[in-house]
Length: 127
Image (cartoon, rainbow, N blue to C red; front, side, top):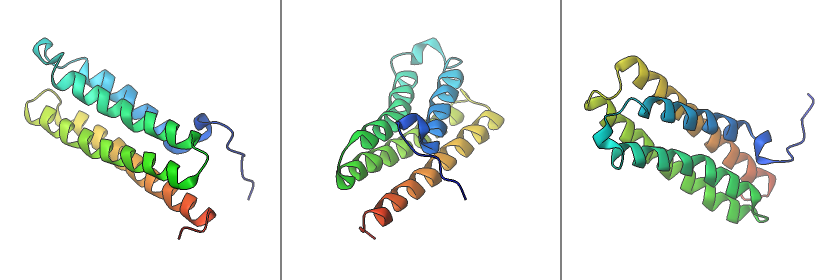
């Protein structure tokens, strides 16, 4: 098996998928009502950006323990985003098909992030 060297955060599959989630949330939230501009629209966008941003910041840390803190923050933001998506669905800002796509992407990011964190722990003898 050939491993590609990871040089920047852009090489991380988990970052790529979280970036796709950011783009999806922006697309979906563009359809939210105007009166949500400073409410749910702003909140779900900021929280989703936090997922990808914390992956980037964690990747930039020199110590694995420091990196893991940021990956945990990313997971927490992911849970926040899932709840905000549920609220959007329940308010009919997202239809069922959009919500299923949204949750699928969230779940993939979560699985990938947990896998990345486990790999970092194993590689540094923390597990």
